[in-house]
Image 1 (cartoon, rainbow, N blue to C red):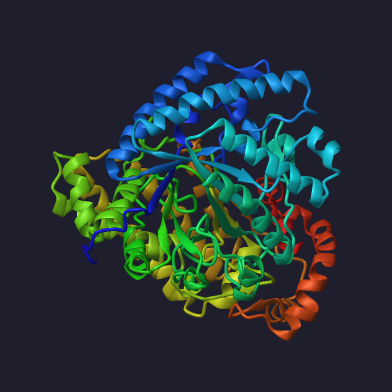
Image 2 (cartoon, helix red, strand yellow):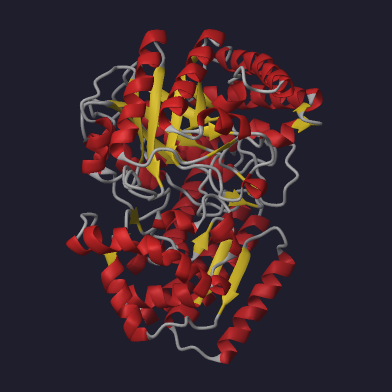
Length: 582
């Protein structure tokens, strides 16, 4: 990679979620935002917890600033916005949050870190709903008022990061535990443009940055904003302001492998930020090595000299639901999350190549270890994840359903391994080299033994490699079900392995298994796949006239018909699978 110096005004933002998560008690954690309910006792901020968060933030801010980050994100606008129609108790709570955030912001500023506040469009509670009727003009007016008050109160907040294509989960009672939640408001590109253009005036007046994330989950006409040039132009076209920055995930779906760099990064004249995830939510959350640096090296080489490249946003803790509790740079931190984070910022800011950054990290973080052996371990781990965690023949395919890119990874979802007939028939539809896929999985599995031997020489904890081996072994056996011949004996073997795994690792991955066949014939399945799944992003005529328009009507019928087959987490956690049909 080029070692040319960076542009001075580029932003290198990292999430500051970890310091807020030391007091979590839930078994499964929603890592999408600060768990505000855990900071409170009797509906008000707990002073002892606040002091602990401040202590953790000081440690965290020191670490990320030392690595080269110059900004952090803090959640969220809702807890800093007070309105006249709120009851006195809620006003008092928000006043306490405002006072506390003054201290938090100063901690970050004293380390040379600019602060951005995050928000969904739009946050809500019963009082906001009553005041606005959940209608556009009053909602937009309320959001503008909230921003003006934020900027007047907090001189040192550099800007706001907007999430417009995602919201809290469908079941609010299970998803969060306090007053505020968010709902999807933006449904069309023109509506997105109206919100952006209107709110941008506030940012220009107060000389702050408006960062708009294009991440969407396929809901409504704006659901393809992250990859569709036409939708992108409808939302951002004609808006010219140096106060606007558009933020893209590096690919055209969530943070996974086998993706190309999103071409919309080069669309238009607006400044762009690229999002990277270093605590890989679909690759183990840092419980075992899952190195992202080789992919990121390719992407950074292409974007770094782009004239509209404004910087990067790195998620080192944020993303997904899981039972895994490591806090990056803090409590029981994952060396693998730290590695990904350090390598990413070193490549972005100092032009190091991936392996040069690995060696540098090893010398600093693991001074007793041989950097060359550490590089060898990372190369092996990268190969194992690519060949066994993913299934190359499927994962390298480009498939779309309605407004969404089908993820390269369907059989692992956050902290769950899915072994069921729906995944089986999908994979068999698109993978022809089935015997080779089974053999390739076991060949990759055996490499973890060599990784454990290297870990011993590097003085690393060996038990995490035992956990990795046992987890990946479940995936290797699952391939026999996905691609081999079904027999009751195979089902019993998978059951035995899954039960033994869950007994050995009660806080490990959940193994969801269901071998009962779908109530739909093979020939009909072929027709469904042919009609509904396309191999390029551009919509076909049948997508425009039929699939997008009518599949939403059929979803409630399919859901009731196959309710037993649809895992609870897919319907309840986050926004739920139903969002794909809106």
